[in-house]
Image (cartoon, rainbow, N blue to C red; front, side):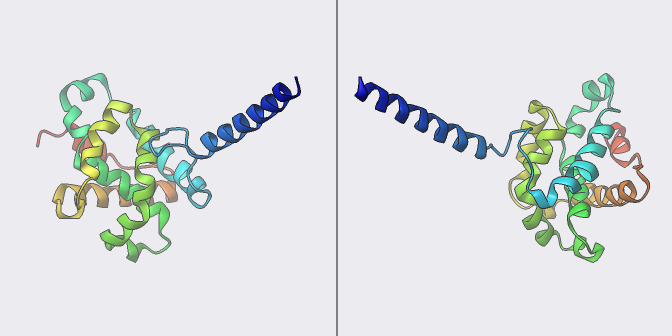
Length: 170
């Protein structure tokens, strides 16, 4: 009887430890995973919220006719531009793409998980491989994201650059 009681206590302790470990090791694709504390308010308020708001303007027609533009290298650059503007204190640092990507890359997948659907995110992930700074379309998206990130923080509004790109015939 005492052996069973000891085994029960050990099982409860092990279960508690496993539960704590699982709770603390949330995956990078987890849409509910908390961002690191230093970026929590910046990214939630200045990146995720405005991007979700913009994405909410997409129509069924946009998804039908322009899905490839929604899930493009431009869109990745646009999201990363928003993130960069929210992360760096100095605007002059935004032009150093390599430094910016080193700093925001650990959080890019988490931000995308909160903004895009699973299918969209899966399609966007291919553009996170390699060096995006060699792509003119990524640079255009990044610069547009930086400008809209700045506009959002100063006025609470964004331009229609991303929507125009998605809906253009190029």
